[in-house]
Structure formats: structure tokens, C-alpha cells
Image (tube, rainbow over all chains, first blue to last red; front, top):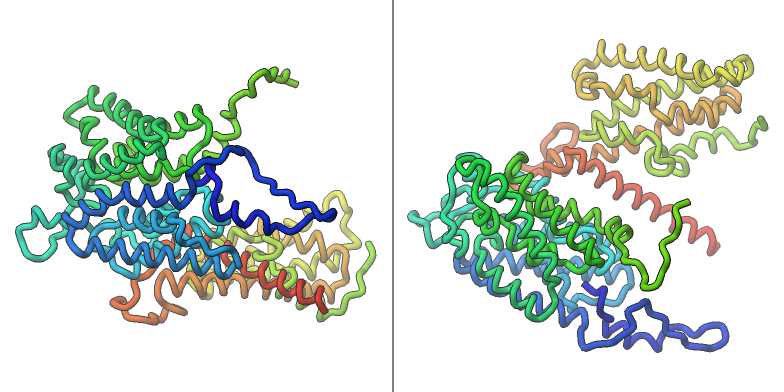
Length: 342
Length: 209
């Protein structure tokens, strides 16, 4: 998340760059050259703040177990980041907040009853393979948290899909395993009331239950200007339109668009994962293509794929296309003449 | 073709590290990824390949002066296919479970680029004895690579070594991903990185000395 800002730490270290052959100390950075008050830590900490409502909602619905998962994931992510940076003799930047966000987002994709060792494994994979192996913050192709979740899904297919009812609807004292609204829709054809989806009174991963809490955080980020409005709008909009087409064709078979928007990880993905500054395109056209195709993919996987939820794979899939999109949607430089085809 | 002056020992040991097939030459990756979900499968695959490689290197080296260059590839493929058929039938007759586990990958040794690669790059230019050492080195290097892959994937994916459970299931939850193709790619990538790292460190030490 650093493409439009310049890291303060890097600025400070600038005069220490080794002098050139003639003794000159040139400080070369890539564009943009304007300086502002934004910095990586500031943006990251604002995002953490924006995630608080969703975290609070999940702790309310799933109890201290949810809090434990957050602590474990954040701790493991920070430790992995520290270990990699220490080993590669890079400046230790674990306080910039990016690993904290990865930890929170990874925890949000996990079911409340997920075992601790699995959470640690996922965090190590997310930061180690998903981010540091690519070169650290700003170089990763895929969203690290989603990559960690995808790895866990392949590693522990049963544990990652064992859900419990939230505390608020449990009748028994022990946690009862339950199906998510999307699984209910897919495998049993049952719809969950939209109001429950909106408030989060359903079974599911920590961060995918309460749509309203995510929405508050997302709109807060939008207000602060850290979220590009095209990405969540394009993603959710294309999900709504595409699922709406099927709903209009056969309302008895396909759920309505509101269900798709509020169930599962659509809100979390659209506001906090599609908008990841590192793994989304930089051009306007590229962002529209990225978000809209991603939304269609998610609906296709949900309606016709083998899995009940498609948000994760849709975003990871589109992440892979980001370099291509950036390359081919580059706007024409003002005044430039289009080169003749050879 | 000029025959090189390396010792026989060098011809043998280069296959074990310097030219170790999947990790340095990145040849023969298909069986490396496909049949290494256990140590035994890796070993069987490696041995079958070693047998075919040894036989093809000997025959091709022996006939190298009598085959017209225009038809050499066709001749090699016939020789290799003969040996692969022998290996396939041998496994099916004496080790049916292994043969079943390896599936189509034993017949696929015909198109394994290690075999044709050694024939083309080495056996057709060198006498029989160095070709034998070359085949043994590369074949054993390949077998060890497959067994290493199999060891890692079997421990993590099944929680066992040689089909013997290491830990009770209550203590270790197997990583399903390691049995799947994705796990093969992850382990393969990690091992290539490790081999490259060790070689670069070795090279750096050699530079210093």
C-alpha cells in the first residue's frame, strides 16, 4: 500500500546513501515527486482503525475465541515479518502496520472455531510466502491474507469449513456446528433473512458475518480517501447486476442480489481486499476491469462452482491479472501520437 | 566430437549435485511433481528411470558411430521405448501395487527429457564407460531428488514415513495440500531455492578462497 506515498523512513535514510564516484550524493526516487503528509504507517493504522467495528462485531457474536484468533494471527504475522526482515538484513519495519492488517484480515477469513496451530501456519504462509518471498511490502502479487486463507483451505479443508452458530442464536451451551448462509443456499436451497445477514447474526467466518460493521469501516476509509471508490463499487455493483440477471430469470432458483451482497465475504472482500493498493491496478480503466470481472467471477463461483463461496478465489484470480491490466490500460500521454502499427 | 578429459569419478558425482536433474537442470519435472507424494513412490520412479537411463546410455554410446545423425533421435526413441517397456512390465509383474501407484508415469519415461537429454548431450559423444558413470550419477541424483520430495510431502501430507505413522492423529493434522499438486509445486520451488542458495554460498566461498 505505498504506491502514491513516500515512506518517511526511506526519506530519512536518504542522505546515508553511499556517495557516487565524484563524491556527489544524488537522491533518486521514482515519481510521483510531490510530498504530502501521508505515509505507509499512517494509512495502515487508519485501515486497522477501520477494521475495528468488524472486529468488535465478531467478538460480540463469537466470544473470546474470536479475540484469541485475532491476537494469534497478528502476533504470528508480526513475528514472521520480523524474522524475514532480520534474516534478510533489511530495515525492520514491523511497526508500519501492514503485517497487522494481514493478520486481522486473515483472522477474519477463518471460522471462529479454527485451531490455533492452523492460524499460526496460515499467518506464516501469508507473510512468508505471500509477501516476503516476493520482496516485501509493495512487491507482492497476491493479497497475502487471502493467499494464507487459500493455503489453509487446501491444507485443512475440513477445519476451514466447520462453522458454529453465533452466541446470540445458540440454544445449547456448547457451540453447535452450523452451515453458512451461502452453504445453506447452495446445498439446501434455504435463504437466510437479509436483516440477519446485515447485522451479522449468522454462522460464518469472523469477518464475513456482519455486513454493517464492515460497511461502517469501509465508508470511514472512503471518507479518509484511502479507498478508491471504483473498486468496491465496481466489485459489489457487478455482483449485484450479474446475480440480479439470474434472479430475474428464475427467482425461485437463484437468490436475490441483496443476499449476494450481504452474505459471505463479499463486503469484507470488496472493501478491504479488492482495494488493497498493492494488488489492484493503478489505472482507471484497469480498476474498472479488475473490479467488475472479479465481481462476476465471485457470482459465477457461488452459483455454478463447487464451492459455496467465491470471493476469495475471484480476488486472487484477478490479482494475477493486475500486471497485465496495468500494462495494457496505460493512459496515453497528453500530446502523444499513437504509433502506427508495424 | 571432442571427448573430454574428466575423470570417471567426476562424471559420476556431477549428477549428484552440480547437475542434479530436477533442481539444477530442471529436467524431468513431470514425474518430480506427479509421483512424489510418498518416499516409496519416489524411490520406485527413480529406480525405473535409473534403469532406463543406464540402458539407453550404454546402448546409445555403443552404437554412436554407426547411427546416421539424421535418424539418431528416432533411433534413440526406439531404444528408450524398448527399455521403458521392460521396466513397466517388470514393475507390473513383481511390484503390482507400486506399478498401480505410479500409473501412467512409468510409460511416460519414454518422453522424460532427462533420458533423451543425456543421450543427446552425453552418450552420443562419449565412450561407454563414462556414459555408464554419467547415467549412474544422474539416475541416482534423480532418485535422491524424488525421495527428498517424497519425504517432505509424505511427512507433512500423511504424517508418516514409509507408510509408518509418526504421530497419532490427535497431535498432527495432516496438511492435505501437500498430497495435492499444489503441494508438489510448493515443495519443488522451496527445494530449488534451497539448492540455489547452497550453490551460491558455495560459489561465494570459492571466490573468497
